[in-house]
Length: 100
Image (cartoon, rainbow, N blue to C red; front, side):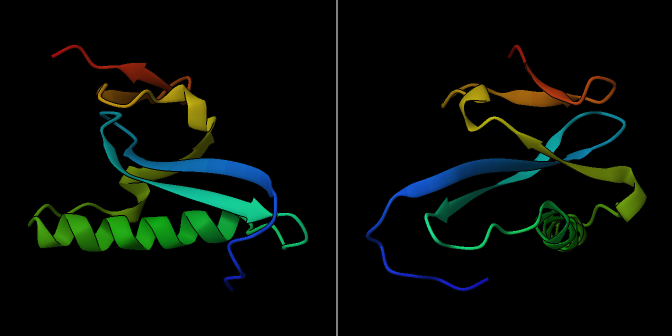
C-alpha cells in the first residue's frame, strides 16, 4: 500500500476489527482512509494482514490462538465511541458495549 501527500479529499474511511470468534473479545482495530484518486485497499488484504498481526500479538502474550479462532469485520467507524469498551457479538457480527 503506497502513501501519497497529505493534501486532498478523503474518499472513504473504513474500520476493521479483528476479534475472537468465540468470546467476541476485540484483539485489534485498524482504520483505512482512502484519498480521492487513490486505489481502495481490498478488504481481503487488510483482513489477511490483521490476522497475521493478531497471531503474532497473541503469541507474544503467550496465548496460542489459531487463525480459525479469529475473524475480521469491517464496521462503521462511528460505531465505536472513544472511552467505551466493546466486544463483537459473534452471531450478529456487530459491536456491543461491555459493561465494566
